[in-house]
View 1 (tube, rainbow, N blue to C red):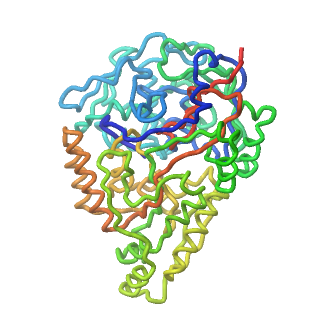
View 2: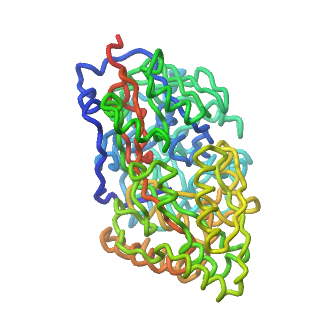
View 3: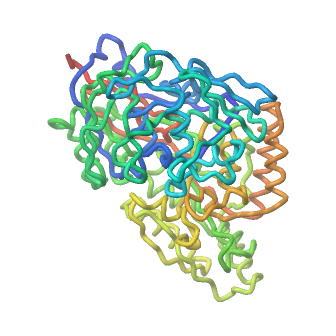
Length: 549
């Protein structure tokens, strides 16, 4: 997930020389059809429910938010810039009130103007119990949000005011210094009330961006065509060069790799949406022609194993620590592609996030893991169930976890879940098992949208739960509040780093990888780079095709 106080992002995205050269204005012509080949499904396109980085990347083509991430490689991509709004917002009342003004001339796909009332309605929808998967900020921060059930059950939220069609005012129940970054999330996009379709809105969000949905077959394909009423002069981020964007979903990763390696026919105009698989890494890295089409991107994401502290025997810290000592992080990285997939993680906060501290509290030590199990009364071992995506990559990671924990006497059964339903399932408290292959990307670059989202006990909800460890410690929750009240970003980052170290003593999660991404693009693709906000995936907002009219 995410957060931030607009701090410097200490990462660098590397773009291959060929792709770097291909971003020149001379080659970046408009037109053509861009193909996106994805082994994943789109979990939720509804902006109230969209909280997965891959789907946010796609949705950025369909709808706009008050602010958004800049379209740039490296640290610059972590910068938040105005989108629908004229600026990053004006705080008052000690950052408890935020006012935004909409740019003039922005229209939906049918030509009608976008108004502040549409943005208000879009935010109000995120309170609906029927739409539970989105980020918690509106529910947690807006006055009166605790008992509000959204417009689908009637009524408006008084803490969002729209004094005119171009002005929207948010009244918060606490100071939030970085609210201008929070409104970059999908839930802060406009939704016209007359297009409301409840859960069915997922299949056809109404466009405020450069593309609209021409057709969508869930789990198979989505085709986007131009929104004729999108005005480039109002949009500092999206270039929208292709006439069409076709995204094929749920493709076999191995077949996808081979298609991108061959790059024949329409695949010459394609980008790979997930990293090259481990089986293809050596071929891609050793073939100079393929290496010319390889794009490398870093991210602010930490991958980890979430340990459900609400279930026995994981309610015992010694058992959780045993899992942490037993996990083979190198094996997990290997099945993800080796060093090209990222750096071994030892802490919750990655080095790219302010507040990161260099430490390794749980180096792999199988004997230490066995001793902790015996100390906790489980000398004969324990049985746990691991929730993992039903994809080749998910299966490979699950098997790596199984093999590593078995050496310490921890027997793991794997529960495979469809990729299209994975996050919804593990985010439902009643359906989550003992362990989850998990990860978190901050909503914006900083620790304030990292630790509290996944480790604040008060954020645990029955559905749409992001605290998959179900970790709830009063002392930690109180410290979150104290840090949130700090006005000095540097002081707050240091405090988050110290709190992260304290949390790791309880071992609610076991970090194993700080992500990088390596993906192939077709020889006709230009302007491709890995975006830090999308876990190093291609930023679809800027990709074009060579020679298109």
